[in-house]
Length: 469
Image (cartoon, rainbow, N blue to C red):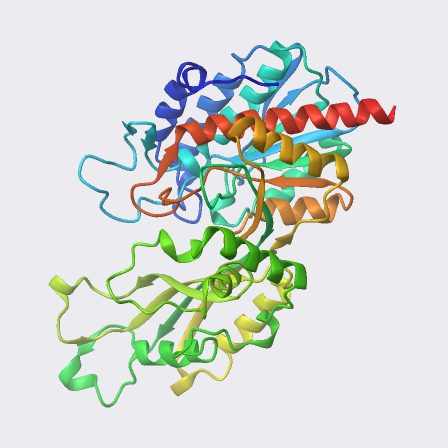
């Protein structure tokens, strides 16, 4: 099958991936002036340039731009085997912000290699994806192994919840044509010793809530006791959403019905791999974790709704905090939604509970964005067999399946548009990857192994089509 080695990846991909690491191409949620800053454009141009250097029988790289929206790259590699149907290989190039100070010797925008690990923001989530996808297809053609028509699609707003995606899926409807297989390279792995395939993803609801009580801050000795604290009112509003003692989400629109097979799968993963949801987390000594046991924690991470306060505004740094009753407090909320919860119903319920009957009649401003989760459809027999072969060939161990706690809106969007499509969601985001956190890293051997696994899967798709015809 594909025989891509680490040396091949180092030669063909690593120089451009290193250049990409230096680009602060933050997702629009974190860079409102992304068009003016030009970083997304720079990253896009870098990937377009690299894509045009690849050796294919017939391929075309295109940059798609809709005014006011982040761009999308497609690399269409024409079929060398049965031509009916399209395989879409998905990734994204936008990044999360640095988050904080990285460890000594590391930097978010300067790639550092230590042994077989590359450290920089975005290299694992999800800069490697375009290299993995195209090198897999290139290896197939180099070895005269047939493949169907393939479209590598790289978007630039995923870390913001993919707000620009639907417009491009409309634009590219005819180009994508009859999608039969979707391979998403933006997911996770519980270990680095095998191919991990994602069975579900949570949805996401991002919101920004501001509570204002004054036109400007006032001396706390004068205003406190008379003017209600904006922070206290914010706390009261959030208590409508989350049980402060347990962390459970209280709104009925957020509650899942967890399929029995996913409950059993969580127990099986916990039985074989242990407390995978907790083992890699850098918790402080003595912290009491949520969940009753390892299996329960897997379900809490993959099927439970959660609330995280990921940002605050109107709160001074401790070093400059004076005795002032602040005029307002802003909280940025990140809610993870169960895979089978309707994000629009959850969105409407959250908006109502946070903006209706506000305590003390304080002024509230609110905005949000939501995206559905995803549950993988049953695997076709040919694909199930291919996944086992892909993992054994690339990693030397059998494939494993698990849910993931993150969100990839693209999968939900494609599932609605192409009800019969087969999905493979996989990736390199394993232990210590620190996606979205400090010291993000890409395990290079895993990137190579995933690339070889992708080649096996794409080849199996073409072989299945050949057998049917």
